[in-house]
Amino acid sequence: MTTHNATPTVVFRLSRAAEDLVIENWGGIHTVYQRASGETHAFNEVTMALVDCLRQGPASFDHILRCVAADFGVREEELVAGEFMPVALRLEDLGLIERTAAP
View 1 (cartoon, rainbow, N blue to C red):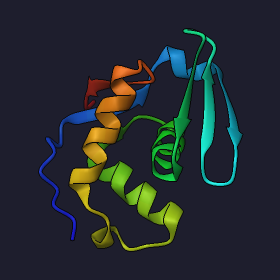
View 2 (view 1 turned 120 degrees about the vertical axis):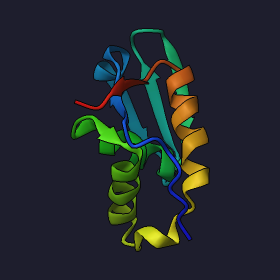
View 3 (view 1 turned 90 degrees about the horizontal axis):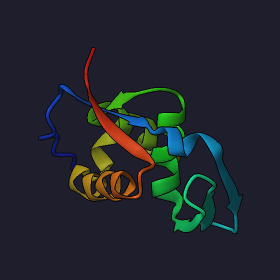
């Protein structure tokens, strides 16, 4: 069951560092080379779905959940929202996404 307690005015977007990623899919694990930092990361399907969602443009946390649910072919209610915020925060720590105020 989804519990949406994220602040609706917070919007995530890809950072400049995420504009030039080299991504390879290795059967469910994605290696992501970040040219800006020279670092390589390993992302699972959920993390990659979140990044792919933000490639479409800035999005609220709720929109990200809807996007990921659609990507996996499940109802949004089947996702546990609390499991996605740590993923977003980790991507933020890596410098790949950033928060911005809603327009």
